[in-house]
Amino acid sequence: MPARDLVTCPKCGSVFSISYSRAFSCGGCPLATFGNCGYVKCPKCGYEFSLTR
Image 1 (cartoon, helix red, strand yellow):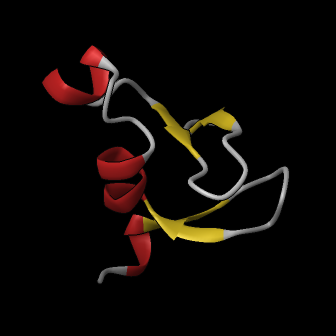
Image 2 (image 1 turned 90 degrees about the vertical axis):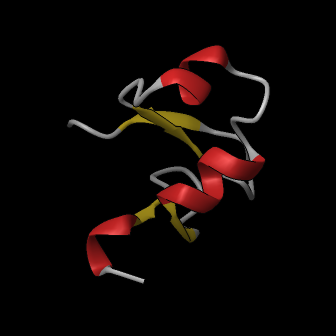
Image 3 (image 1 turned 45 degrees about the horizontal axis):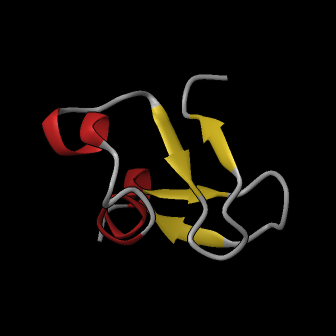
């Protein structure tokens, strides 16, 4: 998995893959289904944050 696909949650410090987050944490969101919304949700704590800081 490419290093650019990994992010760190600013709230809990968990390191996870953006694609994993999209598949498991953003499953019900239509923006995640149809494109990149610019946010990612931590699969561990549920905190949602912007990818562009």
